[in-house]
Length: 218
Image (cartoon, rainbow, N blue to C red; front, side):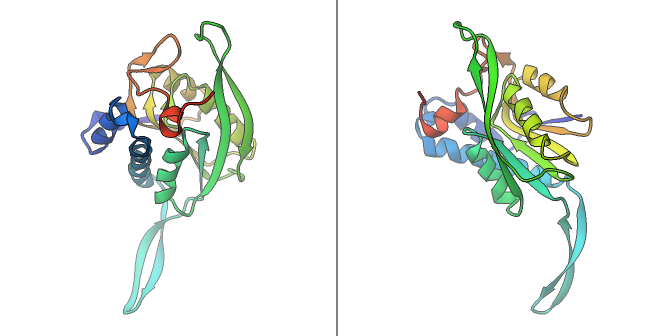
């Protein structure tokens, strides 16, 4: 399985990541959402290089030309609610893709908030059978929400290829997700942080992505 970590090389993504992590910049929700979206756009562009292509003849006002175009049927799936701006970044690039949405969120199962369970209550998705499935979620911490989403989406059919895309991942989450994915799947990360704290938040991370995008929840 291939794991791609953009923080291992220098690019403008580093600037967006610095602003996402900076607690002063985080006060501007619009900028925070836009940076999540921009990372999605750039990750989608890099992912596009791995797709299969076929030539298509395009007619211009002065003649014709053959251009290689992606031939993959694609479904972009996201985990609500934090995944929405990240999803939009991918959709800005893959504007012909089908879309899926899964409500999978973690719930603490003990009073100390150190044990986490995953609750899935809603999904809207086309069939992913034979398609390239791109699952986007900004945070890959324990991996529980991602695995629950993958399991729910695969009930609609077996995808041809799976890409898991996140902004920040923890090593524990990557290892957990790897156990559930086929060998030809790919995990894409803008950064892989050292680990999680006792409350299962990625450290140093940048906090709760959903709250930073849309405000605190009850």
